[in-house]
Length: 529
Ligand code: ADP
Ligand code: ZN
Image (cartoon, rainbow, N blue to C red; front, side, top):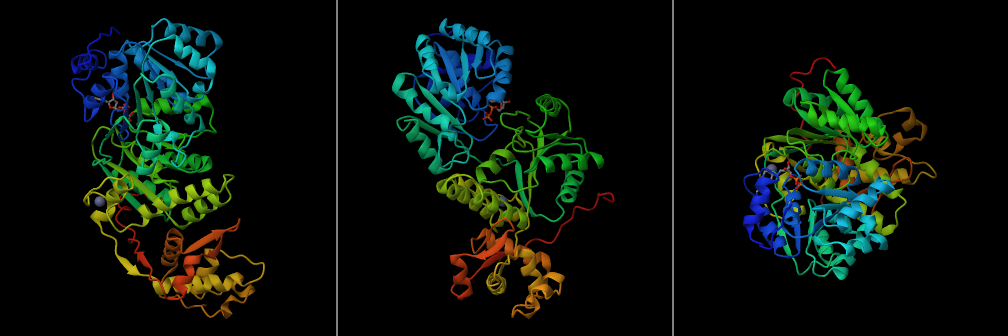
């Protein structure tokens, strides 16, 4: 691309129109592009689909030299570079997938000033050889994509990103632009410090995605609930269904296909060629449903994804926001639907407890999960809670499940006391470990074999909870776990009390609970499943 010395927006607009074929910049793009072309540093927070790429691609083409892009999405570099080349942009990448010859060729192109954009995996920058290479060419700017990866407190920390600290020391005159679609206030501050960007400008777009309708429902029969959603509201639509495990990805995809919905599986355990083929079909064909682990979706640009459904609880609000953000990039109404239940909380708490990470890691994971649980259990507008999490304010949106059908809350103090004191009594049994099921059987006064075997029908709380049904009790356990008033321990998910439990048992604390909505509508068009 020819580049001139002028740094006004005219050049940028020309590049936008001639190279990328768009008539005008969108949102903050014009300001960002102008600032970076003029040599300024920037931190850009923009939701998925907001158009972050052009914020560095256009300046890279306007400024003399090569734009060096650091991105962790190694698997996508080839595609990104191919797409740019198709537009006539001279782009290349360096990552571990290249042969020696290919690498030498890209390096030579860079040194000879024949590249507009060079994509690098972050670990490249830990090697002195790469740094020396960069010294030999002219650098137009550094773009640091997925900049939240530099934050140790974020949800997706990558140690290699720490080496990016040196960019500014080594090339103090080269402008840097860091971009991310997910950053809480704390993460944002950490990015600024670690990348030494405090002097730069921050461009924070609204994180609101008004066309996405957020809905979080109690998990009953998840696959059937999903089928109802797809048949009832998204017949023939393209969408993504996220599952936690590879096994449930496969089972869910088979289930959908067996019920006449065209679905494909995607997870890291599948052959690379199968993954590639399924991804290509999803992008190209209409109305396919991709059932996937979170391995799927980074960098996928499909505008007409009409729904994103989660059959399992995401680990963090950042993850949830990023995954649901893949719906409705075209701005048309779309659904973000999550089914969530007691087992999700138990499972996630257990995973954190048994993880190999150090104490700091477990605390961090716990915090992320707690924020996600608050979003699930809230009686306020989901969108407001989401935006608030990212440090932005909003008013009740009128387009999420809690706005449309406000959930009732109730005083669950007595129920909590009954449950907690049952747990306390069970804990006194030497060597025996009991989970939620046993506690609920006791409260409901059920003389199951296991209740008889341990004389639990003799406990003072036996039969004391018949005012609630089983599913309501599960809701109570789930919310106590979510609020930290109860915990799970060990491989059998034994229920145990926490310090805060004592306050409830000692009548020092009231417990508000959310009344789970009764199962609604759906079923209408569901054939016998
Ligand atoms: P992000 O990286 O923020 O998720 P992308 O850079 O992938 O977003 O852009 C999302 C989509 O919006 C892409 O299809 C891109 O081509 C399109 N887009 C970006 N900027 C503009 C613009 N100014 N005009 C029209 N389309 C745009
Ligand atoms: Zn709302």
